[in-house]
Length: 191
Image (cartoon, rainbow, N blue to C red; front, side, top):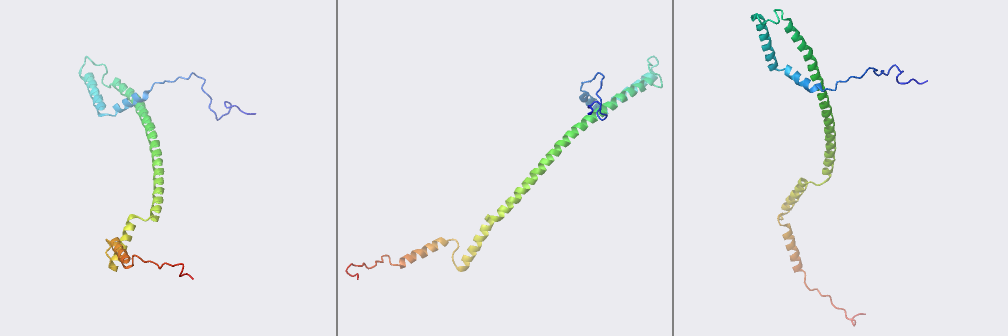
């Protein structure tokens, strides 16, 4: 027999009480209050209030509302501490949430950057291999320089190799007779 989800011990039972939710966003106001509690301005204001409180309750005999042990002042400090601690914790929790989101974004960005870097490294390696198989400009320049040096060693002018070769071709044409006529064969001379 199958147990239902409610009967199983590892499944929490839903609350039968009325669900009361306070949907007020105390986060922003709590952060502002916690930030103010951590400033020098707040400490200066609190110190001023305490000094005035003590001075009035000690010096002004007619205005004493909190005599010497200052029980009301202690109660005020206790109340303030009771509210300050949760506000500071609330602000820390919100900051932790922001840090977590920022960390996740940084992690995703770092993974993307790593993937891009690896892709670019592979592309660069393939380009290096491809360039190694292609004649580069520097390689061709070196080869041309070597050819020029060899031509200079042979005594030719490397700057005008085409002109000299043209002159040689023209002189060869002049040496050959322009009209070389083969003797005509008559039908009568044929055997």
